[in-house]
Image 1 (cartoon, rainbow, N blue to C red):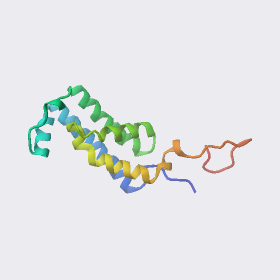
Image 2: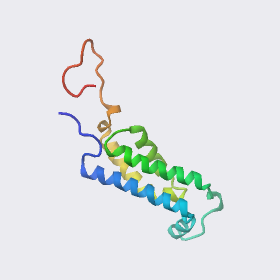
Image 3: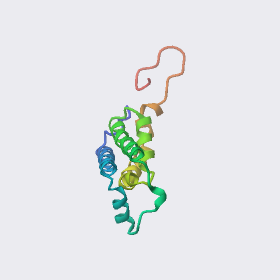
Image 4: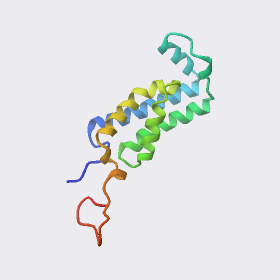
Length: 136
């Protein structure tokens, strides 16, 4: 029996959608410049001065989160998924605050089923053609 791709189960599809929504919300915060106000509302005090980043970095981070959610949707690219999860776990930025929980949720689901990505499936290394089945 073949292993279903990541995104096949409903909870994995919800995690992918949450990652995309978190990335789009982070992109909105980065483009409008309201990230510091959002961070002050979350933490309850003024945002530290060392956290002032160029909007370019925030836009790149939010695009990484969005692309990671899309890449995980049908297990097309584990690299995109890993970049999306890693960029969502950077909590020091306003984009990271928005996308942290969806990123942790996605990481938890990936760690439960790592073989749902084709890069972790076994490869045929024996002599001759591979036997019929899920070998690639």
